[in-house]
Length: 117
Figure 1 (cartoon, helix red, strand yellow):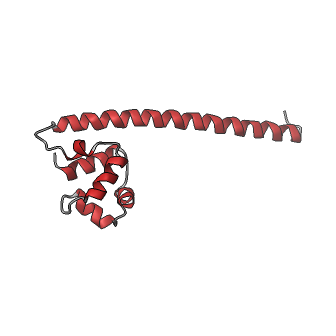
Figure 2: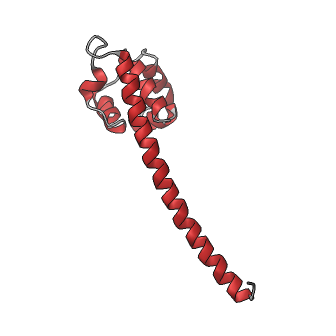
Figure 3: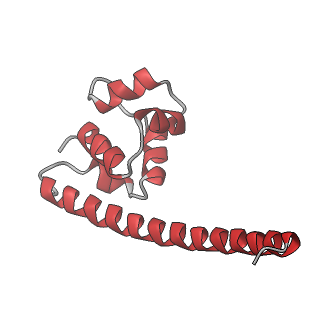
């Protein structure tokens, strides 16, 4: 799998838009589209940003297909994506519960002031 194909796969697995990744790389959207299409090379500085963005080692990202199976990439991304989504969902649920409790307290206080039971 070529680097540009991995970039597209990573972006999809993290549910990032092309515009967001372009913003993180500090380049315009058209340049990122060319990178992801394999028409423009990724600079070393951009590679460093990408590895931070996707929490990968540069060696993992630039490894040739002979060194690792394409299927391994899909499994790796699915595992990372699944774990990240589960963690994100749990955090979101905890935040929503906190917000609901706050709203509940406010409603009880308003009901008390209005004499509504």
